[in-house]
Length: 281
Image (tube, rainbow, N blue to C red; front, side, top):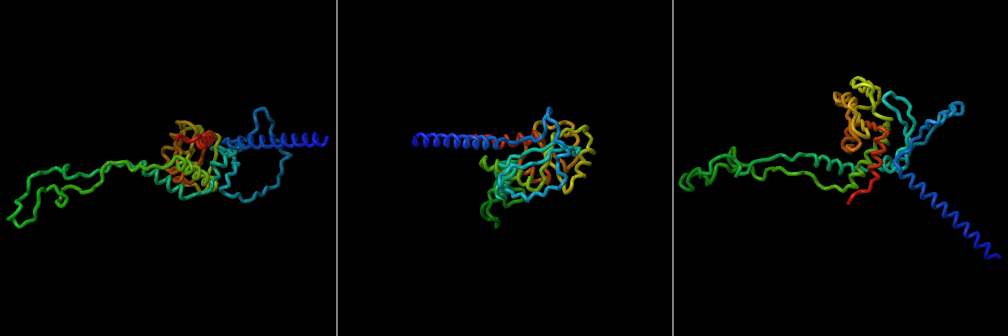
């Protein structure tokens, strides 16, 4: 009888531990998803305002680089409240590493360098191939051609030739650099999330007025999920301090050139999906 009771208790304990393990694995797999939208649905009633506390809530200072999910408000160009969004901690809350940023920026600048510089060798310089004077008897130095590098208009020795300045950088390092750049902007409070980047008109003054209302923002980078809207493109093309990029073109150097980063909700989802995609070997 005692053996039967011990067997039943052991089976119950194993079942409970298995359920706890399954629940934890489901939570971790859910946490790997990019974002969560914290807005009421169409069929849900708004939260009663009389139940909300009117006392200010004091939050502790957030530690940076703990890979914790971030809760950020969602607005638009009219500063309207569009709910909240949870940013994935493994993309927007990584430890800041300047060495990785330095490596990625050097790789970007070297890769985009054209490398079209070219100088002429002795066989490419125009001029005669005749020996300028006799080898002996003139009292002058011995020369066989006037196209040598010691003469004016002559060749350039060991000069640059067209070549590629690009060098290899592992994909995981490039991806880590983009994550660190996004984490740096989020830690500084310079990352804004918009519901979308739709503008009512193509007039430049609307975007200019919005940037003037922002505090401590000198250069603004707008990132959308898909192709750039034509109205937004026309509204920002005359502003040297506002640039627009699709999510597929977001890079470390562009983020560092702008002190404020504005991303649409779709762009955040695309970036997180891109960061979580397995790297092709």
